[in-house]
Length: 99
Image 1 (cartoon, rainbow, N blue to C red):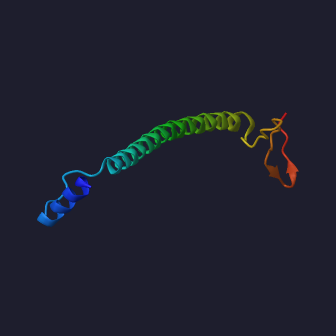
Image 2 (image 1 turned 45 degrees about the vertical axis):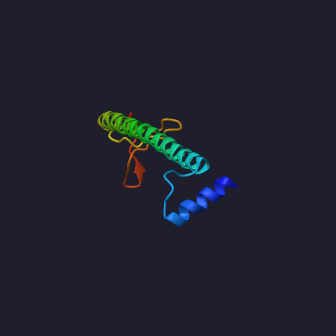
């Protein structure tokens, strides 16, 4: 009872509390920790995403070089990736087979 009485006396005198309760502080700390951890996770994901985008760009460059080689050698880079069949462009309705 003395604790509640002391609190009421402080309220009547206009004295404001100096600190939040222990439970409130723990809730605040827990929430801030969760936000910080989530932001850290997002940063790690973004770094992995950035690296993956660099890999994709590199693979696209590699594919372009292969296409240029195929174009030079076969006159087309239209190739089936399932079985390697070259899809030559049709001329006058006929397939131009290069032997």
